[in-house]
Length: 358
Image (cartoon, rainbow, N blue to C red; front, top):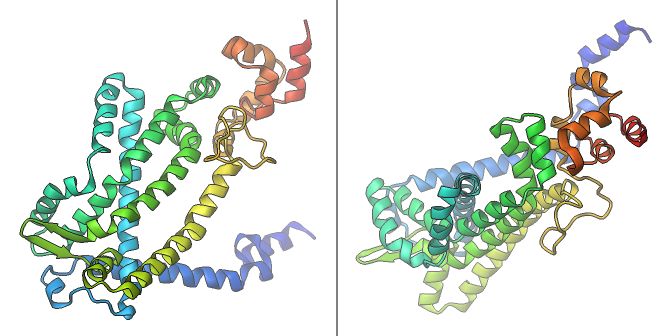
């Protein structure tokens, strides 16, 4: 086979997959249908959130089982909107507290106080604020409900991320400084991967904890203001008022189905991915951060791949890798061990032999 035939084959089929690999299989079609259904549901829920506030009086929450899937969709969208807001809050506030001593003295006590305030305490002023921010629209009540769930999720995640940033091993910190990673690259290549296992488990706990406040966040009553947003929480509130045990059981079953769905489709793959890149030997193994026994990675794989030295540097330093490692890290990092981890991009056998010389 000459180069012309190979080039023709590459141009004929995208990504050089060939005729068989370029065609979608059954699993591709199922995944495409699932993604299309998810985007359709997301668009429908977002459109309903912008409906006029008066529509809640025209179409109040009912105990019709046909409406239960739509209510479950609306509640799930609020939960995920709150968890995304909690992640953004965690990345900003927890990072600032971990890297600034002055900010830490203010942020950590404030977070400790805020996590002690009950959700109903936030609703007393947030409902009026958001309803005034979006007058005549359901979006104000939706933002108030999302903020109520946010207050049940954010503090736990912020403390977890803060603690992880404060316990990054010194050798990883020195490697990132040695390769002169910018603060942006250091955050996404070192700090976030290192904190990911604990943050993901705390995110799962926060997501589960938010379900305890679904009724309070969707069936809002503050003074003369009373709003029941379509959702599982409002369904439960109406069922409890009517003492309908069958409706309560259906709501609990719907919650179980939703939790099982996003646990298997979202959190389970994420946990499996972080277990394969967890920092073995530098981070203590706990019951909340399991590591697969066959995984042999001392730093996240993405950080290891990105932080490898360029090829020109590797060629120039392969003969004197041990001397370079000793000058850069001293006694704090063994050169041969660093090369085995892929930190310096050198040949570990050459460095081991060079390091053994007197």
